[in-house]
Length: 310
Ligand code: SF4
Image (cartoon, rainbow, N blue to C red; front, side, top):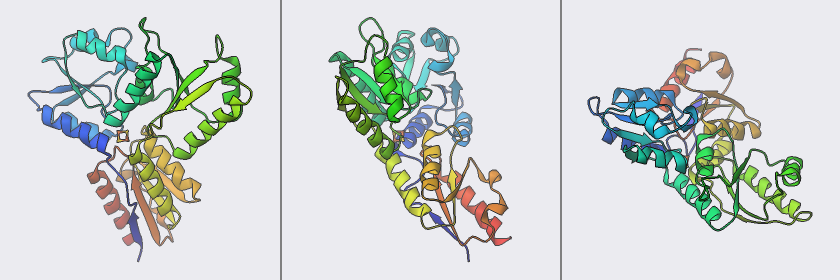
């Protein structure tokens, strides 16, 4: 008998659940809400919300110039939603200045990171964010590090590699800042952030700078990563469910693979392949923070069909 075992922590996190509930309660098909950018990195959730009157408009990264006026020209009744990943201060002000009513679903954990970025810069510190420069949340956090002239004082670094960090310090335009506030993309892995911080300490031996670290990691995702890794050690194969664009889902797969497990990242049951389960006894199942319960249920049901009729 093949066992399918779910990770002890998986699926919708507090921030995504809250954002989806806020949008669902605000929108109806006749009284829609327009989200500025993708609501969550999960096409199933986005389609479901679309049917309930939550429509998606381009986000700050997709619009050149003033997002407020660009959005206002497309929104009929003036209600726009900021997504769980948040937006930078300039985009936020432009939406306000355009007279749009804002439904702000930014996850409180992301808001906390934004506020720290803002405070560091007000106190005269440069902000170093360990994260993916292309990720909405990270760009949003960097977007709250503006000075009075509207210049950003954040540098985003996507590697903890010591040599790369050394080059960053030595070749920083205008000289490396002497005071740094260090933060991390909420969904990054704790081990990677620890290495990043440890390598900054090593660089302090040869370079004159000080830094303060704020741990902006999200406990929901670190808990999911630990649960996925623990499960991966005990099963023959892991199935990881979540949007292909979802950073935290990709991290879950990585966490499983680091335990030596064979792991497959899928968005839905149609991607499952019977051959993955040939001869296995124990199948582990986990899901990213933007994966709804019904998607996980559908995947589990399909795995059951594949193993029962193989
Ligand atoms: S993963 Fe964490 S930080 Fe991101 S939306 Fe969910 S609860 Fe918030």
